[in-house]
Length: 418
Image (cartoon, rainbow, N blue to C red; front, top):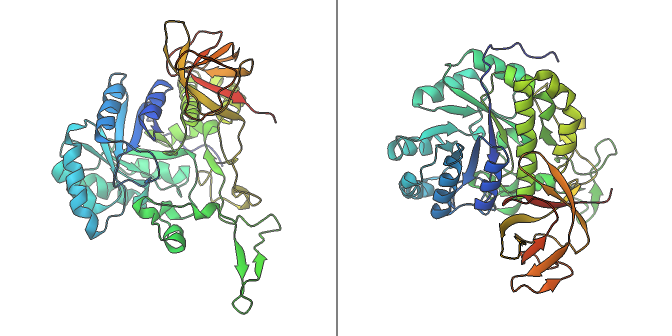
């Protein structure tokens, strides 16, 4: 497909990054996000994420705002009658948080937000199936500041929307992360198979399961489901990645480039945020430099877990090459070991261990400015100052001696063997 015709709008697009908890929010902010989206303890679509208490939200908003970064809070369930009083109470509690916007999909919840949080921007979630410019105009007339495009839209369709909506109405679009098998994420599989409703924030991701066929006259006899002899993971999509297509995204008039992943680790968030930050800034500063560095972006974006990559619907309808048929596992080139904290009186840095590592191992320190420093672990101590040969216990508080310049929120990772 040819590059979409430029709208003439060369705004600097926002990079919008997910955060599952306060620690990850801080990482997102420091590694390049222009805005972060988070969930509270209710009414978001990621009930299994750690999510934020009101106190953590306030701290996260203060941390982000001090660095010029916005915070959006999700309230994007499809509400039932039983939810509405709880939504009212929740929105009343959010008045003092100071977030920049609410992300909403349900019209009834939208009405309550306008009533109870009249000074807060309202963004319309992708869950609302936003597929045409009249839908965008509808939400704009009701007071929405931004609409998140359905994942099923091509760049040509987004460009047409941009040309037919008010200039001040913003378009937000997912550019990276997991793809849902169901239309705009409105899936009934989880509810049907497990009783846990994806549209109420409790998805069990049955699209990643392996399926077999049972014929009613032969109960207990499981026949494999084949699709062109490739395997049985028939709903299992590759992950979206548009790192090579920043020019096309900007040309289509997209205001906010959104990354999926509110249940991801700090390593994932830092890797994706830093890579897209570099790519966007490189393109805006020097398009030729961006083009020459595409192999570098590809290499960097693969340094966190992912399920192979696809461009989704952006260049037309996906075909059989957008699915993974043989397994439901991630590719994993690096292991997350921990986040660097403050330095003690002995010059060693605090670190909460996430995976095992040992004295003498060669590790990599990932820094927000784009550098990756290879180091060898010189020493490990526990909280009492006792030396250790290794760090075997998950979430153990340690102090480490790594021979390089370290700052708080640097990430320590290990490259795994091919």
